[in-house]
Image (tube, rainbow, N blue to C red; front, top):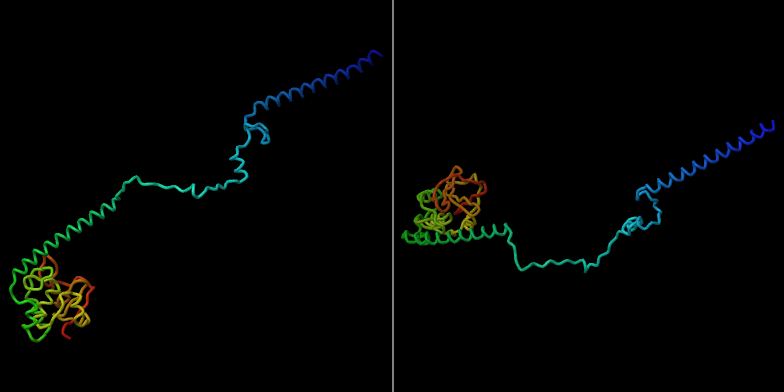
Length: 254
């Protein structure tokens, strides 16, 4: 009986010792597993507070976190100057403008030569009375608009000549000046001056013989919305419809 009781006391102590040994093994295994896991962690898994220099934040990162992002630059040191290397470049627009100017100058010179030749031929081709001759001795002493228009109509077909004021060739105001001179009325050789020499009337009151005044041009009103005029170079005195609404009527002699 005593031996059996001793055996019962021994068995619990052995079981307890065995349990403590098992627990120790578990603790050791747990620590070993933790150590292995720690060694296997990648670099970015280290704690933010690590003292290892290889994982310390850079100065730029620290400045960014501290919002120290303002940069001051000395104004003088920031000045940049660019010097040209002694050459100039011409843009396509400048080339086009220069070409247009050259073409305009050439056209003006051609026009001047043509006008000079035309005036020489014009002066040599007419020997009749001039506007000045008629003013000193009018062909028609009484001014009548219908008569004025009839005289003007006789010159249809006379070529346009820039500066012309005789039946050898007329420009617009030279034509009007020459016709009215035959009635003893002196008018300037200018469309603007002729517009200012008479009385402006309503368009609906116009009759043949009145003047149609436009910007830079004039002629005789021919009735029914038409004009009798010396148009431009290459054309002759003719009647045609008035092509614009930008005009007014002037009556001479009233």
